[in-house]
Amino acid sequence: AQTVTQSQPEMSVQEAETVTLSCTYDTSENNYYLFWYKQPPSRQMILVIRQEAYKQQNATENRFSVNFQKAAKSFSLKISDSQLGDTAMYFCAYLEYGNKLVFGAGTILRVKS
Amino acid sequence: EAGVVQSPRYKIIEKKQPVAFWCNPISGHNTLYWYLQNLGQGPELLIRYENEEAVDDSQLPKDRFSAERLKGVDSTLKIQPAELGDSAVYLCASSLGTGNEQYFGPGTRLTVT
Image: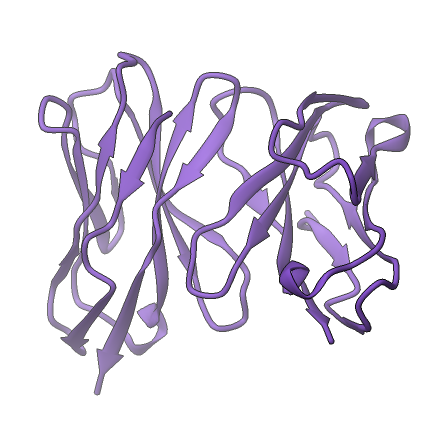
C-alpha cells in the first residue's frame, strides 16, 4: 500500500519569513496526484495546492509553491511571506488509483509574530 | 456555491448507544467520502461512494458501522453500538470525478463516554 511520510511533527516560523514542509511518499505508480491540505483549529480541511505527477513544472499558488522531485518521491511545500493565518496543521496527501486519498500524519505549523 | 455540509458538529454519547452523522455534498459532485480522523493524525478513508454505489468500503468496520447514500446525494454514516475507541472526528468530502480535488466538510467531533 502507498504511504505518505511527513517527518516534521512541528515547525515554527517568524511572520514574513519562509518555511518549507517536507513530504515523501512511496508508490510504484507512474501517474498520480499529490496535494497539500491545510487544517486550521476550526477543523475545515482546505486544499492548498495540487500537483499532477506527469507535469514536471512545480505548482504555485500565490505564496505557496511545491518542490516536486518525482524520482526521489519527494513533495515539499514552501510558504513564502508567512502570515499568522497560516498557522494550522498541514497534510500531504497522495491520490492513488481508485480515487483513494492517502494522508500523511501532518505537520503543525506555528507562525509567530 | 455552498460547501460540504455536515451535521451535527459535535456529538457526545454514552458507549453502546447508536449515533448517526449526516453529510450533504457539493451540488453535482458524484463522489462522496467518509473519513475518520483521530487526534493528531491524518484522515483515513472509511467508505467511498460513486453516485449511490459504495465502491470502496474495505476500511469500514462493518460489524458496527453502516452507511448509505440515498439517491446519490446526501449520505448518512451510522455507528451502532458506539465504543470508547470511536471517539474521533468524522469527515465527509466530495469530488467531481477521479483525480479531482476533494472538498471537505467541517467534520463531526464524536465523544463516546
